[in-house]
Length: 270
Image (cartoon, rainbow, N blue to C red; front, side):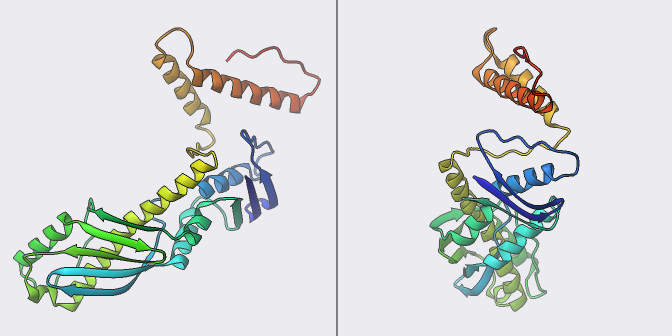
């Protein structure tokens, strides 16, 4: 895999070829952390990236039907906003796969039934009685949303029973309901894209992505080592610990040799 960077913080231009182990070494403020964050955000799929755009909304016999389009440009803007808190302005791209390209180019086809964990705030006019409002909230919170997606298009259906037609015919109420349904649909659609992206990563040999900020690295490492020792059923160290020790030893040897090639190291004990 190769990471391309251009005008990203202190990095004017760079290409990083990634191997099984890639070590970034350099002076302070030269872009090591920036490059690491660019790599992380290329491989991480957040839970609120997908943007949907409403096409139509119909109500028939208490059945709500919302049709939508996956807004690729809106999704791209969501991604830029998501990374803006952690990365400076600039460009970066990981090849052959990265989360933004995957979401913007892949077109999924699936159906699912979804029940939201929470219901966003919504507007109710005076034409809706307190009883209707209670019933409508209960129905929208506890009903099953039937969601289907085919390429860029999709729809979500929900059946709301025992609610007065007077309340459902109010335009502001219907507008509020359609907005809620669109927001609810974004969650499972986003989840499906993240599942597809993570499956693609797995095919490329990447089964997990974790970013540990500088300053916490050795604390996390110490905790990991301690857990491995405590969880070991025998006095022999478990294989993950042995592998980790070997990796750290090789990294330290490489750093020492880079500083002073004439220096000879004895076997490190970690």
